[in-house]
Length: 153
Image 1 (spheres, rainbow, N blue to C red):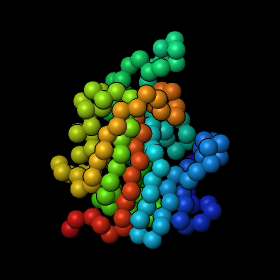
Image 2 (cartoon, rainbow, N blue to C red):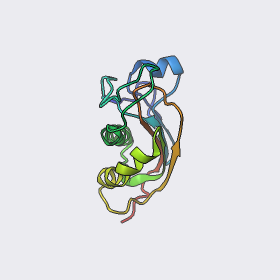
Image 3 (cartoon, rainbow, N blue to C red):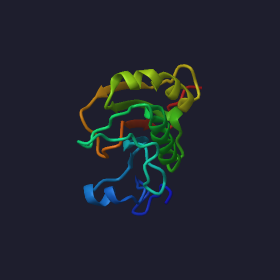
Image 4 (cartoon, one colour):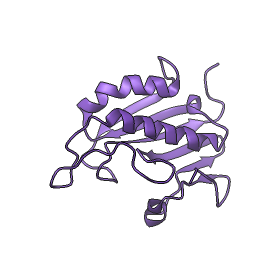
């Protein structure tokens, strides 16, 4: 299932089960602003990409898939933005929520630069360490705000 806008052109959904159980759209447009809910390492079918292995208590015990998960999250953001005619170049602010700051810092620069297609992405960025994310094998989640037409020429 691809990202779509089934209810109206202002909101976007993946069609994954957690949208209904939690009750939210993946993205919402208000005027020229696009707010993207936290995206993580799932594909268009809702399957986790590069899930972290879990210990006996159900906590991630290996953070080596952080980069793959981060790439999947940026890919999801790009697909959602495309529904509004926007790209990652239109992102003005992002927040990365990570389970392990060291694992994130080991890959975040390279992955962000590749996702944005530049050595100096032109968006404000926050990175916050958290104790848990929505899916247990999830290591990262990225939320952002884009403004149509804001990318640098």
